[in-house]
Image (cartoon, rainbow, N blue to C red; front, side, top):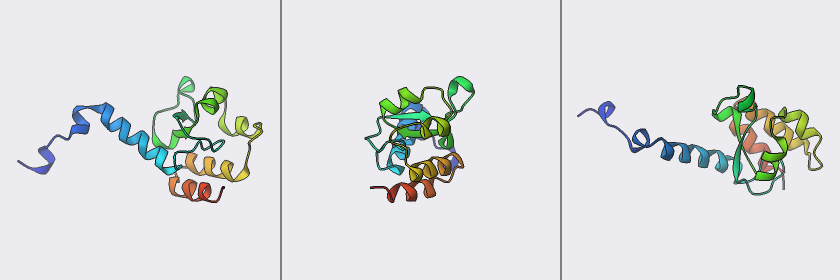
Length: 113
């Protein structure tokens, strides 16, 4: 049997693969909401699914349930600028995430205490 012929558990059970993917996103933000810094409990679509946004890494960002609900289907940067917890460093991290530069987003979040 060749390695390419093997079937992984991820392929047999997509929910397991999805869980690993979601966990990897939360790890990048150290399990904190990218918007406000509280513990991240959900994944927000930067460009909402209701407006054609896809469930891909550059469009899905860890956040708390409160921010996810408040943002709803708003444009992310316009919504974020209007929040009382707005932080320009987090805004730069969000923009880096949108540009699929997750390493830069993670580094920027490390500077926020």
